Length: 286
Image (cartoon, rainbow, N blue to C red; front, side):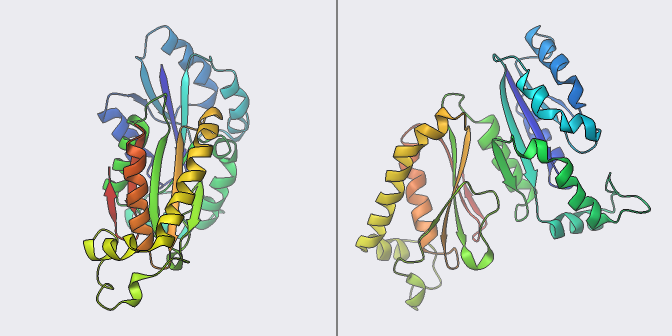
């Protein structure tokens, strides 16, 4: 029995995530009261809800119920496979989304502004944030990219294997907020300084050929793979279902893209669920 719990701040994409899971066969329930989790688990065991259920629990719950969330989850049956997925975005992005859609934030009132509500909501959801196995920052994601991530990483996850996301990014645009591991590859030779290569990315053959000829690039890849080979089993043993591994260079165009692509190919051979995303290129490889 699989139970996926979707949570996050209002405007982060929870409804879209729930819709994706419904499309791939999950029985979905929005805005479930936390206190009903044990009853839902019993209904699943009795076969009333099917083998795969996805629910959304968020700040629409009462404060006292959210504070009880960790204790309630710990009481769920061990036979129930539970994944907690938390979606979020930067405060300014959430504010912009509400302004564009003209929706009312559930925590706003005559005395609470939109930005205050957005910030207060994170504090209310702390009990869930601290237990989430997967965090997805939707700040720079289109609706299609979010759906792709949920479909690939959540519904496509083998219960015996960890789902890995290798993400390239540029430090000048900020470190990804949802990264579990961050590798800085700015020390490697930079194709950007070759005018003939500047217009290309790490997906293009001229840049790949340039980096493939650099011994330090191979050493860096070997060091990252050595760490992952040593510690991925430990993460899995600690019940981690998901891991986001961010590879950063200056602009997120050349070195980080090349290395993320290489790591993606390597770990697909290990029969893991692997996704590669190039944040600055807006390109995702499922």
